[in-house]
Length: 434
Image 1 (cartoon, one colour):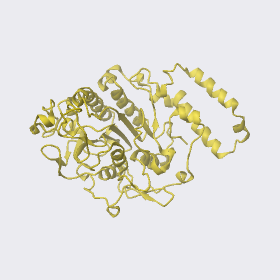
Image 2: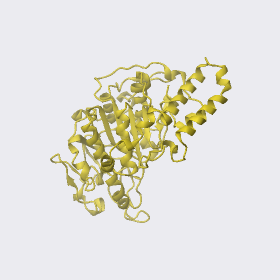
Image 3: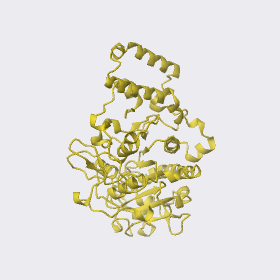
Image 4: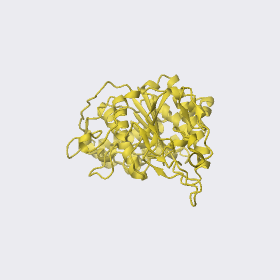
């Protein structure tokens, strides 16, 4: 019974908080057969600008494009992307671009909650993120027995909202910590601290020797759950689970293609995780909240994203994993299309939830398409609105999870994705690319 916090906290806290309601079976209805097994969510924390990435508008002029005014053609006729994404341009047949994402929210916390839970902020209960729903429906609630928890975050949670919501701590993501760009990848800093495997085993044996209370109550259910959590934590440190994080098993050439940086190596780690059965992986890529020095930051961030995502798509495809793995790229919103040249921003971009872009690939989603459109300056929605709940409903369907199914809650079952009866407008499922 895996615990849903970091390994260090597993061992230090000495408990797994699992509400009784969470271990009850849940309805596993499905609107359609599953086409995907796993999701890799590449979360561009802070919000990427659609004009610089997947919805370039060179005709809008310098006040909108700045120095990034020369978009490039992709390997799909008629689709252009930002000039700093040449590697992704060569993989455009593998992904589709949604250029009409919208929710109108400009706050990080509330926008993050809405995009990842499919719910508007301000309700009476905190709804879980899609990662936690997948951890329930395709993980623990579906008999998941993997040695690694089904919901992983590389390398730290957002901290913007409670990912598990009312589902409780068991469904929180397992945050690895560490930096996969370092060799070896010291998850939670275990290796970086100079703690050898032998010393870890000695610590484990000492703790067990001191646990006289546990030995006197061998049949206690809570203590049994604790021991199971502890065993999984140690397996991730010392056992087979640790090998999944060992990027030295990959060729130098492949690691170079992904990029020898935290983002690129996180993408490679994500591939290894889904290859080993993990259901949901989030890569939290920081630095996209570019109120100042926007274009300086883009010259660093965009090449890293370009190399990491392009290599991930190519690698998954060559291994036969792309058909069963959804890759989702985006953030909580976009950024202001008109550049804020005035002080104190001096060429920055603000928050923009009115219209922005996302990328979807794999897991039954067709590549080489564009869904929706923004206007000539990227400021207004022009065609085919896609709301967060539309996006999540489509992802759930590809996973074989019925979006109208329910989640266990003390007040009764709660729909996974809200309905029109709850006051949610909808542009419909992404049937164009499903």
